Image (cartoon, rainbow over all chains, first blue to last red; front, side, top):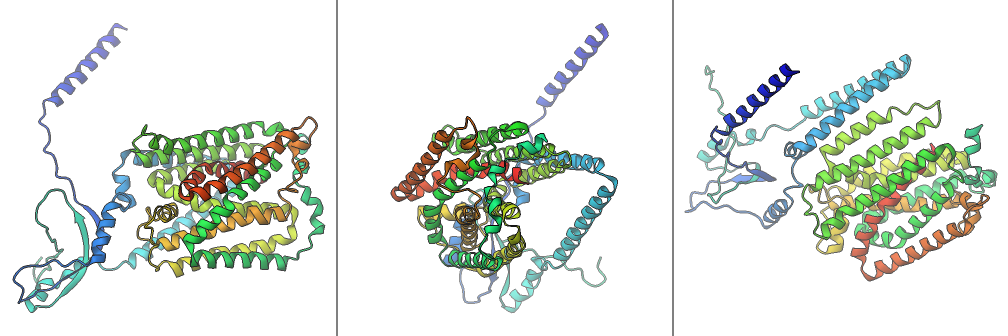
Length: 192
Length: 345
């Protein structure tokens, strides 16, 4: 008993010391808040030899859409984003999925042998159908956005317009607007 | 024998008039298809206006018919179903109170509405667990049934609910009207079996109509929700949660399903005798049994009629506010459908 008490006291002292030790560690630098995509639209970059100032033209409808998207920015998040932003919900969903799989297993074990085989076969078939459907759908997905911007530098040299998709992202702060173009460096022949 | 004694034949008076069905299955099918097509046309053409009119006219009466139906299906003595009904009534009471408490606390400034999705997810979880408990209890009433599978299904639904609580609630809004079609199926199975095959064929038409509506309306521009009432209607149909989907399509779809729901409760089920003769209190087992409560049952039904009239008056005075109140309180009838449907399976 005495030995247990001493051991417990030593562990408590060690844990307390650890808290104080961590208390002395410098605060991590605050990471800047990430931007939030509120709307997906399109952008045309058009070189103009006669213009004296860069101009950003936004149609009235697009502006309305941006305002509406900003107002509903919470609802406009994808499901993955919403789940990522809520640890409580992720934990609860995980717990219930665990329970579902566990109870499903118990139910399968309790069911008759023949019925179990049928159920497992049905479950595998459904999983196969969903998996195949996912592969097909993903395989039919359009090309990534950067493909449409690949010819931008050449088009600018030639004085031609380039169209592509655009995510409108709201970032904190009061800096100038920035346009980030996804340009992939294409390896030249003989270059790794 | 005990189980057989618990079966209330009084709840199935129309079973005695099966052979008296004068309407042929073809006419029955024509009525169903015609009603569905008419509802689709109206809901697609003027979704907001039809939504206002249908809720005004039928929301109250359909609740009264449901009340009449539930009283009719309540056994004269609970017997072995005592636990089932105890859990059912406790759940209806507690879940309704919790559902009403959320907006009430918000409007009384006692809750800021922070973590609203978590609160919704918790309520949905309690609802699912309650349904799971009812299924298990109902399954235990018959030794040949093994309804243990309901538990993994309920837990999986709980997990999905926690991933997207508001979308899960929206799914309940769209799924609830379809429950009426299940009630109708169970009644036809027992009272008009000769119509059942026709009914099942007509049900195939439902997904086709829904897909057709989605196909036709998905590219339409969203409805102008520039006033409080129109905004409420589009929000109720999920326009806020699905901002990239045409609100015209969402409202039309919801109105169509609601019209089917009202049609089943107000027209179809009373016509096949599922609710008994509306004016005869003695068709209700609780009123008819020895030492029953005919006076109390009559008072409840008359009070129900008074509430329907009050609802119409409220809609006439302030439709938007009354609509909000109605859809909050109406959760009770949504919940009450679950135990009575389970009793019929």
